[in-house]
Image (tube, rainbow, N blue to C red):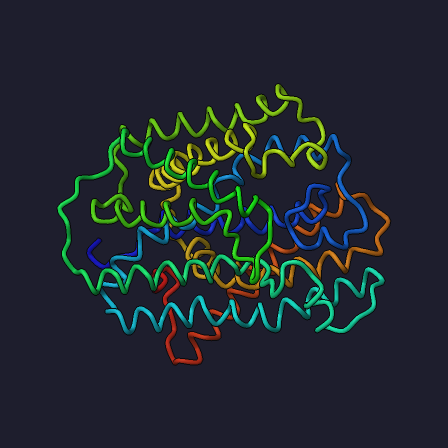
Length: 383
């Protein structure tokens, strides 16, 4: 990719980070849960509102994390080639490992202790950390630790076996098999680790088949220049499959009798159930088609490289890192307000998006000044 940044990749990653922050704000006030504030929330959405939100936003949640790993896989081979194993590994440990460790062992325990104290629970930081499930939760930064594992694993393997196989670019048929492989492996692993279950460090093992497969797909696509341009016929097919699937998911949910997510979601999370099998099949289809669709959409419509776009893209990863405490603190600040979740959740979402990106941008610009490097307003961000 001739050493240049690809603005559409930066911009779609920014959009995904914003989606995650906004989604977490909403999940904190749901009965079905999915963000730790649900452990202490003072109000939840009306069941009807929650069903509507799930229909509008829920399907995209099945492939957003996989989309992150796909983008990471697209950019990893070139980064490894440029840095070499030693510097690549050191860079990933600092960029991904240190934020995760700080969150797991300090920031997140203190944050959740404050949340529990605000909800009227006694106990020290250590007690809250030990008795919460899962043990040593790191908030949203489980993602960085898993990506660190995959990145370093790939780097070691690639260095030990530097041969570059002359593999053809994935075609439509291969992508179908990729989606089926994700569905089957996800179903099997959820026999042991159901969706939404927690393990030590909250590593989301139930989501690893999707994450690993999409990271590998990104690597496979990188050598064929898909980061710059996805083949037109695959972009179109992926868009159709993703949009149709997203529209069908809520219709099918209602058709099989889902009327209250908090009550009815159990069979879809794992086990020898047709609901669990159907869920993993939808995930496999959506994460492959949805990731390609989003990247193709960005390649055509998110190519902005102006001052604001560059600022947001540079702040995206730090904003992802600091979102957790900001979301919890904003929710705690609104806790005394006598208002329903339908009011509080959007306020938390807007506030968290604004604060996370603004504070992240301040951090990035201060870092530039600290190393004596001033950027031009339209200069692309570093790798």
